[in-house]
Amino acid sequence: MEYYVDLNSDIGESFGSYKMGMDEEVIKYVTSINCACGYHAGDPLIMDKTVEMAHEKGVRVGAHPGYPDLLGFGRRKIAISAEEARCYMLYQVGAISAFLQAHGEKLQHMKLHGAFYNTACNDEKLANAILDAVEEYDKNLILMVLSGSLIAREGQKRGLRVCQEVFADRGYNEDGTLVNRKLPGAFVKDPKEAIPRVIKMIKENKVKTADGKEIEIVADSICVHGDNPKAIEFVKSIRQGLLDEGIKVQAVDTFLK
Image (tube, rainbow, N blue to C red; front, side):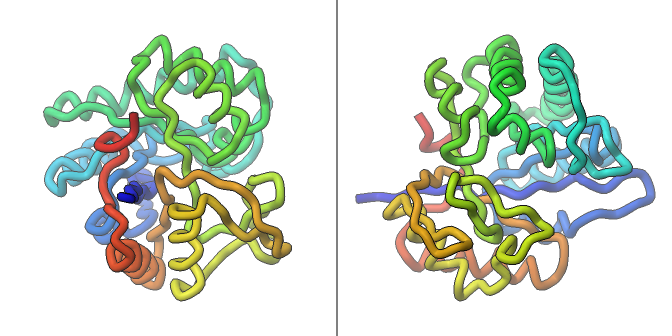
């Protein structure tokens, strides 16, 4: 049996004179990127540079819409209406799509950021507003969402292209959500622990939670972070570990139905 997986990373998150992450390095090892669209991070010049870099490397690009919260980096939950969620998503997807068109590329997917992502995982009204917006924009646009989440299930019911995302470097709760960043077990920092973990997610559709229980999971794409030198080594190790196991690492659009 052949196994395929996408490796994605959030980049383009600098802003003006402020540099965030190690984009030039991490893009060498991933197959898809999620580019900030100016709400939680990023600006027009950085978006253009990020898309250009992805084009040169042959890496596929996704929109990474966040809450309008530069100060909080989009990680603070903001009470917004369903209509606001729909419009915020469309606005940011439209922005990055313009840069992709300018570079002769097309948007592969959409992945929400931070608190926007987490809230849409279990808020039915917000999730359906996002799905409405995806259908209005392009029914073939891939929706990259947390594996097993409400928005993943609702997207599948609508017949949308749902890419279920897992995290190589984050801990899981029993309900499939991610462990709060402030709590013990939130992060997996050792590649020797992460590599067999993600291989099990791909081949057996299972992952061990922070409290030691095993839950079901689907891994179409693995999110990896590369915002410091050690994280870059982590990304390299994950990719090589997958290849060594015979797992094909390629952009999700090439194998997702």
